[in-house]
Length: 120
Image (cartoon, rainbow, N blue to C red; front, side, top):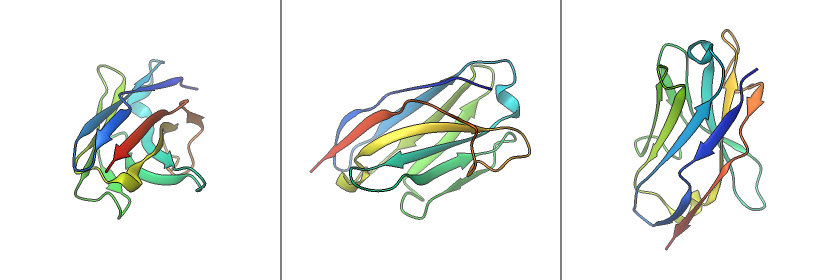
């Protein structure tokens, strides 16, 4: 099990940039596949980006080319760099962890989330 705490949310102007961080506890962070999900008001939670234990990434089509998912295993942190943010990107963003060998689409641990609000 790993505990996750997100930070970095806030109000961002349309077209602006923001970087979210996810701090993880535990000594085996490097063995986890990590992901970011978001949930907008009145909508279901959706996958945003994932990064596996070796650093391979994948993104939802809606953010591809604008968002970058990265990790620093020495610091037990995952990051989501968001560029060219759109107002429809307003949501609570959560990081999630899936144990080695498990898809990041089926995480076992979740953070509380951080609010990102895009202003037009």
